[in-house]
Length: 232
Image: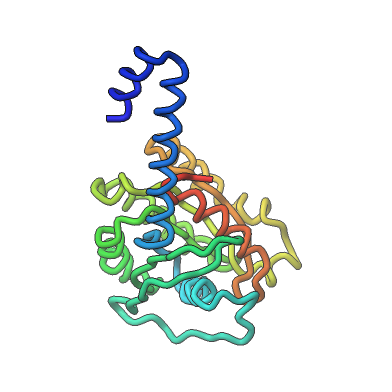
């Protein structure tokens, strides 16, 4: 609609008419972005093998705290736990977030809980957590998620970003670096970037320690600004 009106205004008023229509379109986009971010909420899901920090990350976002200290979560049951929509400061901006459900990371939950959550939420973004332990298990889980994105076409088209979050940096940074840690996932990272380029989403890698809060704010700000309607 704006394209047709823009052509008419440009024909009548020249560049001034085109600039006027463009400003209206930008204004409409900004209003849509504001309503989505502050009213409807940004749909996203958190996945990863067991005990990587999925529940802790959701709690960190919900509590809006610098760190969670001694927070300890119970094992997530089959089917997951419902998570109500909540407001959280991402950077300096208050955003409404919709993780919908916290799901477990046991292998037998991938084909059921993970796929059902992906289909249900049709998320704009996926946060996938790994840590420094059991590399083969994390690889299997990450490859499963990439297969799921490939196969679930209806949900796939909504995805704007996948964040690979190397958690528990308070433990592994004493012995290695993010680059060395991710070198163990060379094929998976290459596949992730290739899929991102082909399907049109943004792949990103960050490190964090959710329990201490190190690196989490920066990673969340980059991620949520990538999945909002007006990416920033």
